[in-house]
Image 1 (cartoon, helix red, strand yellow):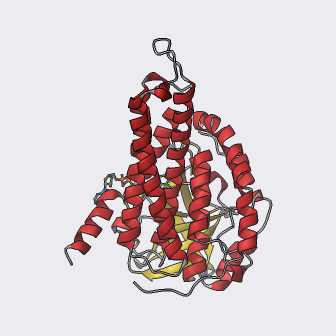
Image 2 (cartoon, helix red, strand yellow; image 1 turned 30 degrees about the vertical axis):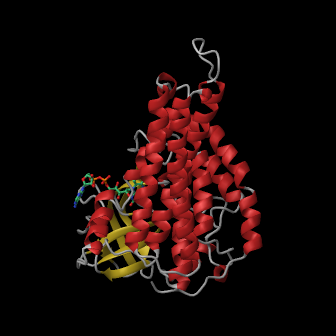
Amino acid sequence: MSVLPVYDTDTAEIARRLDRLPDVVAELAAAAAQHDLDGSYPIEGIAAVHRAGLLTATVATRYGGPGAGVSDAVTILRELGRGDPSVALIVALTLITHGVQARSGRWPDPLYRRLLDAVDDRPPLVNELRVEPELGTPSRGGLPATVARRTEAGWLLSGRKIYSTGSDGLRWMLVFAATEDGETGTFVVDGDSPGISIERTWDHLGLRASASHDVIFADTPVPADSVLELGGASGSVRASGHQVWNNLGLAALYLGVAGAARDWFLTFLKERVPGSLGKPLATLPRFHAVVGEIEAGLLGADELLTSLAARADAGEELAPSRVGAAKLVANHAAIEAVERAVAAIGNPALTRHNPLQRHLRDVLCARVHFPQDDVILSMIGRETLGQ
Ligand SMILES: Cc1cc2nc3c(=O)[nH]c(=O)nc-3n(C[C@H](O)[C@H](O)[C@H](O)COP(=O)(O)OP(=O)(O)OC[C@H]3O[C@@H](n4cnc5c(N)ncnc54)[C@H](O)[C@@H]3O)c2cc1C
């Protein structure tokens, strides 16, 4: 495995921002149940993350940020996921965008500086809109139906993107589209541009407050120079390093969900004293074994993500199959942990009066983010067979 140059970070500034994480997580956790219930956009939670300097923590020092690395991003997302995974996902996509730029220089400097300089009183959220109703995800190949037509001033973008997380608050939208000549690229769209509308289609079981709605573009203007990877081979090719940030960061977020479920489960076991037993459920060997299974799975997954993140920060170029495997193992551990807790305690797990059912619905989203298990497994299988 090749080793990349070690990356510059402002450790004192990162520590200062991480110090604020517990308060932010507590604020998110206090509002999460209501946002889950009504599917409302968690605007205050995102503002709190931004006030703490966490939303822009991965902006590189050469651009005036503290240059938080993958390890810090894993910590931030695991903790935010514990508070409210919808907020964590919205934040993750911004952290990943900056983190990838910091390490791989995906963007031309002037365009990236425009993204950073567009300061107003809104949190500067950015996200990639790639999936479409007909195509599904372009990560499996194929051409998007969203089209960019060339004009004298630049481009006019038209099409529909689904699962567009954070849609209600995005300052910048990175839209994967095809030109009339069949070339693909990622078009950098100012969220205030004309011709953008949002259809509030997101009504999922989990991540209900993530505002992952449909975004529709109707002749939305994009400046000529605001395109990344124009003429790139296909949507399945992502910027170098993207897989590391994406796979470890999102897996950490769902480990956070499982951690919140585990914490609630432990408190329940300690406090619930059935009349028939006369002492807490936590005293029963049966529950010791369940807690042990949950804890072993989560500890192992956490160690895996933490060590791979540290290796990435030390400059090691990690194979996509390796971080794919970590995502798969961590996701399975997270889902299994919540399912075990639910199975162990019956009705108290399933009532809407307790949060365990919400954690179960949220953690199930872990499987859906690309790369999905079938893609990861066949990648590992092919590599192992030397193909
Ligand atoms: C909470 C959440 C937020 C998200 N936010 C965003 C976002 O902001 N931006 C964004 O771009 N994406 C986002 N996604 C999309 C996500 O990353 C996946 O790319 C997308 O969900 C893929 O679609 P699907 O597999 O769920 O459904 P479909 O594409 O409808 O596929 C249905 C099933 O068929 C399988 N399938 C489909 N095509 C193939 C194929 N060619 N070969 C083999 N199997 C296939 C899939 O694996 C799946 O099991 C989000 C997803 C979630 C869960």
